[in-house]
Image 1 (tube, rainbow, N blue to C red):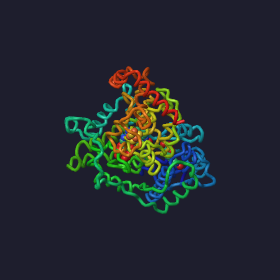
Image 2: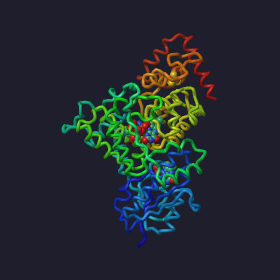
Image 3: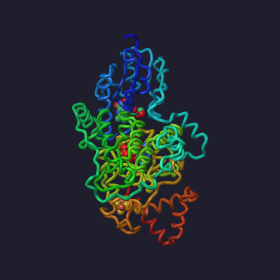
Length: 511
Ligand code: FAD
Ligand code: DLZ
Ligand code: SF4
């Protein structure tokens, strides 16, 4: 082979036709895949997340070899492994003497900065390709954002609907006469349903078993269990999970999108985010399939529209915000929250049944669905005033689908209002009544969701009012918070003092 092109494929770039390969020739290229300590430990990822990513990488290397590519694969337990993308690329340059490097852009500022300094460091031409697995390119998002004072997802989403033509008729009008059917997607949980769909559980093969053993030994002090490991690690199995979702869960996805039930971690959710985010599934192909199911009369419009909105709306929008706002976005703290993350986020050991459920399933499966992340663990952190960066690191560590571009806007922007309202027009703050309406959790809890003060009072209640009172200077003028502030002001001074005292004692008990 003449001097080849070196093509690093990062752990979330497991797409067989990733943009860095668009012009590459298998006879003239070396793909470089690197398991490196920097990536496994820059935060202490959940054990199952590491096992999932490494196993999917190893399977992808096999697939690419079978497709005729030369793959140079470096394992994390190789004694010569330098531990970083830059160090391993330097060693690969020594091995292969490439004439150039082609790479698809990274999904995090941290890694983007590394790639950008390679050309100078290695004295080789380095081409960084835009990641065309996303529908909205950086320049497109930046010009959309430049034309607006407020970056509201709803308007971005409508543009994405028009751009893709999904659920849009020939006159450019939305299917069903409305862009958004969210109001129909807030049904409380059903009675326990014997026909509740279950995600497929994939039995670990030899490659996955080897990775699980490595992770158990090497990352023993990271959070999480490996006992329930059931992720798909190949494109074929991820496709099977996608088909299972479309057939069994999608028809009621809309109805129960916000519902929560004790002992039911998955409900009607897709459980596809880990696969979409690392390239095992193609998001555009997935939403086209959803549209087709709707057109064939197999799923109702509120389900199809609701699902498509999550992918071409929220997912693309949060990515746009992450890159548009710059590397400091992750360190914002508009509400000046300073409290440490309570220890029970690592164990699930708390009397608050809703928190114990959301955290417990996170430890077992590296998964919680959106409303658990937003309205249980996120809401608690918001109300209790936990420092955003600690909350961000927790979310990045514990979920198998977590990469900064998607995790930071959801955590700092949506859950914690730490960007001061860039992403959401008001904080998603709620007391126990919301949790009681959307779940069966309160029925199994030692606290009484109806009480605000006293030994048995649900902690979310006093914390909710205390949050409003504590942040009055910053939030009182928010038009969407007028009603709760008026209700707070209508309470007697004595009641307000008792609530604040209840919250103070609870917060003190967190340490
Ligand atoms: P479903 O409910 O079946 O939704 C379908 C798909 O839509 C998801 O697979 C996902 O690709 C996309 N989606 C839905 N909501 C969002 C959203 N708000 N932002 C981006 N994509 C969305 N999602 C991640 O992929 N990675 C994260 O690190 C992540 N961190 C989050 C942190 C917080 C605090 C919150 C509130 C949300 C976070 N989300 C994150 C968004 C959402 O919770 C997950 O995408 C979803 O729970 C994944 O489960 P699912 O595949 O069953 O999703
Ligand atoms: C998350 C992760 C982990 C745990 N390990 C690796 C790894 O060893 N090698 C790799 O290429 N990627 C890994 N990843 C995913 C990367 O962190 C991700 O690709 C970058 O952050 C760029 O978004
Ligand atoms: Fe959570 Fe309060 Fe309900 Fe208990 S009573 S489950 S703490 S909301």
